[in-house]
Image (tube, rainbow, N blue to C red; front, top):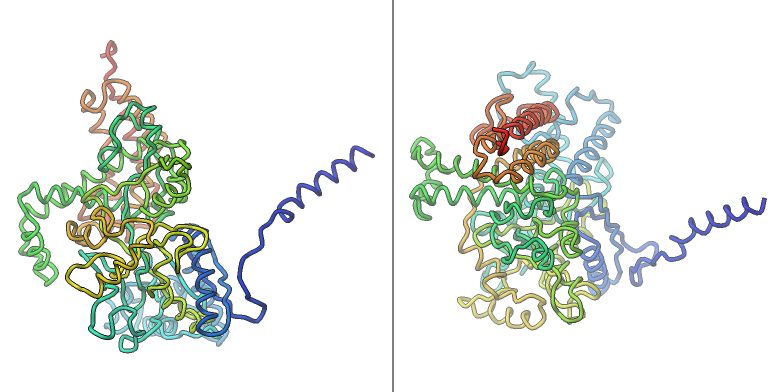
Length: 587
């Protein structure tokens, strides 16, 4: 009896401990009845805390009430997008049926279809004019309704993630414009006095904002590494380019994230492929001016004028990039769901290096640097290996607090909100607890010798920032000068890369590592050309995978079917590669 009582007491203590030590949520002077804004985000806890605290104080100063932000952290951007699509489809269907209207069989897919053209004539494969008219009515009703009393996803704002995902959300009809193009808040995007652009629409080929989404911070993609672990592996020179991660000494020592779960890592992988395309085009004899002229002709509808050697160079570069990703995947110790785990593991020595987005790398370096100032982990953006991408914010359709959401968007884009990204902890106007180590998007945070007003503002900001934002290695406006992104090369392949990498490096990962280990154990790739040829084969099902075909294949073939075919192909190829390794004494 006494023993049973002791077990019950211990169980009660274990259950109570989380509640005893739970930290109260800091929401300032907020009380029940004050405004609540609901925001879904892939951002980490530090970003959520600092922007929630600062916006509440800002709103109280300007509107007399503090605000509590109800953060919804559902995982990576890809998971968030799937959640939003499901919520909108379910909510709209319930509203539509509630009006006594018939719901089409493909209603959920139809309302989110980015390719449906309601203003064009019915397509030739339309089942009937009457059915097409019903589909058009449902499609337009979803995209012309922005009222939380009708339907919505019970979330006001999508904050963070990449441009690709916000563009997808816009195409699916999930976003609405917070302001009309003629009634933008003054001094938010341009200086009202002289028209100076404060937040560009884009730079070097990368879109940064539109009427529906607005870049809030800038990101590059690169490599994090642990110097002590490199020494343990016999690597004297830290990695400086993507190719360095294919070094056989990194086998089972790289941290990599799943691109189907993390939009930022999917973008990093795209950059790896894109850089190989750039190199192949340069090697084919096309300089920057020639490339710009050809791409301009293509944009104007002149695909027929493209030199065959130019198109072949892009395809050659794409193939080289995919093969580079394959070997990085072969060296991986694991593929994690969250991109933020990679810098944490590298800083702790659980991985020697990994692929990361810049702010995760810089932030982790900041929080793990010991008192002597020697960082455990460092981050580098490979020169010419990354575009400058924006992390946007968007207003969701059917927001319950649309006016409060507009205020939050304006705050995040203002100089006050932007200071949170890179000001030192405790600096005037800076974060209170965490140095976020991110790159603001507003032009005034970076040097601009051609504009005295922007330069003067930069001189003020630079005294408070953690990073030397004027350094050519950090300044995104300077980095963009040496990198132009042509979305036609790899942007349309974004989803294709995700699924190809998953099948190639994850679902067939055991076979890949087994074959790669066997090749390394017997002389490496140069000694095993036959095995490498088998290892690097790309699927020929349901048709040969190549740069011109793979994006369309991913759109047309059901994902589960495609992944089954591709995974089976890679597993067979890797087993054949293993068997083809020439073992001295056995040949």
